[in-house]
Length: 261
Ligand code: 1HE
Image 1 (cartoon, rainbow, N blue to C red):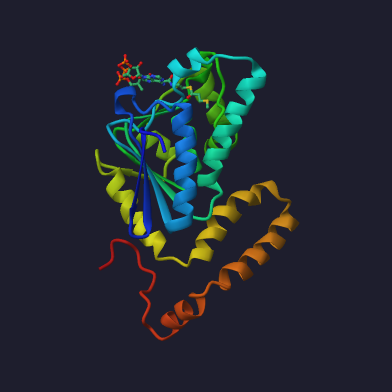
Image 2: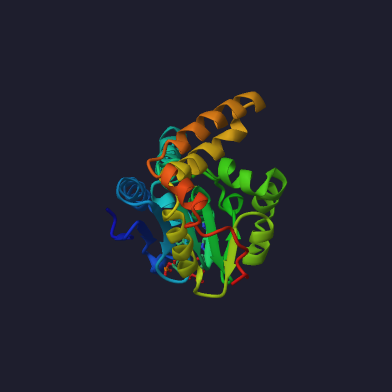
């Protein structure tokens, strides 16, 4: 694993941390490989993963100094982008859900990494941008698929063409993040969410995180058929009968709005 990526297992939750604050967590090739390895390990031993950062900034994206040093021909750059895809796919389409805790810069490849998580929590210091065109490059870590799905084509095009920077509240409005917290509280909120998710049935979690994102690629009819398979799969979880019994016999907590006591 890289010196710039930390890994910790806390009960059912695996924490993967970007740890290169002096370079604003710019993502080197070595870090991308380490993130992929850490995500695989998390999938093997945890029920939920958290992506977070050490320092104020989640990530300033692609390590531009390394990109300059290793500038090369298209036939060598394309496999590099594929390595980012492979690493981030282990988060987005692996066996467990991931929550990203964001603050400060969430830029370029940093936003692509965050978009691979299933839930994004940002504190109010977070800001989001895709300045690839200004650097003479393009997204290469899955952003044109994942970020476009979150934002929609028009908004992503606007961000990429103009270099527009979104604040956390705008990012929430634009569907990039699901929760905004006060400064410094994103990781605590992500932990709280992760604990709740870890208590769900694992097969339901898997159907949600690996099944749902595939649905937009399917026709209506294929989607409904796939849904019926997922429904049967999730209900085959070892804990399902007990969970249903707990509700019927009044041991399970009822659904209640957060503000009720
Ligand atoms: C970096 C990087 C980086 C900082 N690669 N070294 N990403 C960008 O275009 C964003 C570039 N970064 C910035 O705009 C700013 O650094 C920040 C807004 C993120 C932070 O500003 P600040 O004032 O807190 O820090 P700084 O002084 O600019 O940077 C501190 C150090 O981090 C400095 O190095 P130092 O040796 O002079 O101390 C910076 O050079 C270094 N640093 N960002 C390398 N990105 C798969 S394709 C994805 C394509 C993309 O990601 S494009 C977006 C790239």
